[in-house]
Image (cartoon, rainbow over all chains, first blue to last red; front, top):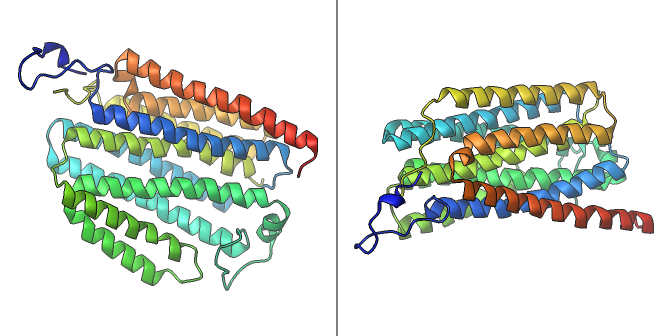
Amino acid sequence: MSDAATVEHGLPGAYEAPLFGAYSKKVGMWLFLASDSLTFGALLFAFSYNRIYTAWPTPFGKESIINATVMTACLLSSSLTMVLGVFAAQRGDRAWTRNWLLATMAFGTAFLVLHGMEWTHLIHEGLTLPGFPKSVEHGAGEYAKISTGVPQFASTFFTLTAMHMLHVTIGVIYLGVVALRKWFLPILGVLWLVGYLVIPSDNVFHYGINVLLVGLIVVSIIVFLKPKDYDAHDVEVAGLYWHFVDLVWMFIFPLVYLMSTRV
Amino acid sequence: MHDVAKHDDSKGQYFWVWGALLALTGVEVWLGYRQIFEPVRMLEVLLVLSVIKSALIIAYFMHLKFEKALMRWMLVIAVTACFVIMYFFFFPDADRILRLGVH
């Protein structure tokens, strides 16, 4: 709610009553999310069209569906911890704000790790796109046939889930900066370095992990150009972004996974 | 200055919403396994469940329910209108390409 109605106009420091009853950062984030929803909307429309009008394969077995269900539970739980973090920020409890944000990041990281394992499994089984590194254990089974027979399956699957994974990664970095500020930079740097060295070069994430390096550079510039102590407004705006990535997954999970379930 | 949006102080409702979201996810997984509907009908049913889940997330977790009516309606109407326009442009064109025999 706004207290702008009580402001006496004409005095130094007075503000105009906001049109939407919210501070500008929040309105800005809402407008960004509205535009971003159209990006995902276009991808989901394309997927739905292909799903309906193409002889669509249904390769996802019990293991994939259980994995995706656990991932969904992680994201839903992360939204709850994010809400609790916003509440802690509003009552000025800095320690619990940080704790809840770290819990949210932990759920988000679990989601990314599970998704990465799922991708690696599918690629090793033969589901691939041109340009993906050839795995030593590259399979020639059902997924390989799907990649050649119905190339739209791999295209839509990897495009949608990669776009979402990118958003989740950005969200985890965003929350890390809000929770830990400049102290998050060395953590991010170590995560990138360890990931780059540990992930084998025939794994697609050997290159994907460089998103963390790009994030590190961008965040370093932001933090050093405008160092600040993030307040409850910033936590709430970061929360809006985080809930959005949760919301998008609520469409990707049923459409991409459950519509392709092998019974 | 404007305060951060103040919501209903009851945290319990957020746990209920979280539980409802998990339960709806369970229903979706059950439907996916039972496959009691043909693909097009299944797509419709899953989309309806997804819209319900997203409405819960937007209203409670994103606190849109607690914002001013002007902001609430502006966002909902704008995004919905964009999706409706996208639908009417995308699917007829996709059908046209299909009828032309382009594979």
